[in-house]
Amino acid sequence: MATKREQILDAAIEVLGTRGSRGLTHRAVDQAAELPAGSTSNYFRTREALLCGVAERLEQRDHADWTALHRVLGPPTVDHLVDALARFITHATTTDRVRTQARLALFGESQAMPTVAESLRRGHGRLREQAVELAAQAGIGPIDAGILVDYMDGAVIHRLTGAEHGKDPREALERLTRTLSPPARKAR
Image 1 (cartoon, rainbow, N blue to C red):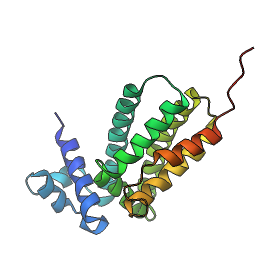
Image 2 (cartoon, rainbow, N blue to C red):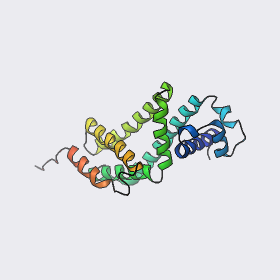
Image 3 (cartoon, rainbow, N blue to C red):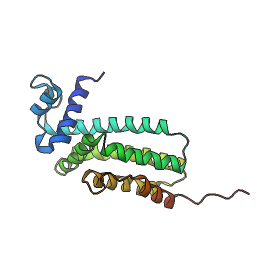
Image 4 (cartoon, helix red, strand yellow):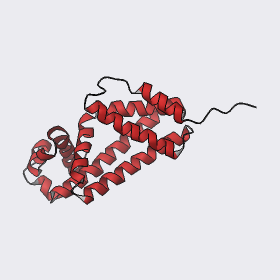
């Protein structure tokens, strides 16, 4: 069961992801969370505090999703990695589209709010570390894993804007991942 704080932040994510930055107000969040007026401001006095809370909640939810996805997939191989990354991109742009759009709106807000930018950097860094760890298990080094993460970020944006609508990300991920993978060792 979500706490009231989590309920407020989840409602804020919904508002930010569906109405954009201009639609995010304390009152709009109260309404979306079906809470009495003033509830959001009791937890987050300023817009900046609310946006930082949203960034942290996004990170929590992303971490939980990534962990659950990783648990389901099996042994750490290149195929496992491709499958995990493709599922993550698809999930981020379909089932979790609103959450992803909220994150993109946060990027815009972060340009004028250093504390929001720092929250986003911290969250992205932790997710990047998880992807690097997964890639390392499949034999891909951290620099090359970073290339994969950067590709994923771009693929998500392209899918959200319709440039890659309906296209399965697996083929491109497979080509990129296999290119970045070290050559298989020959048995002696």
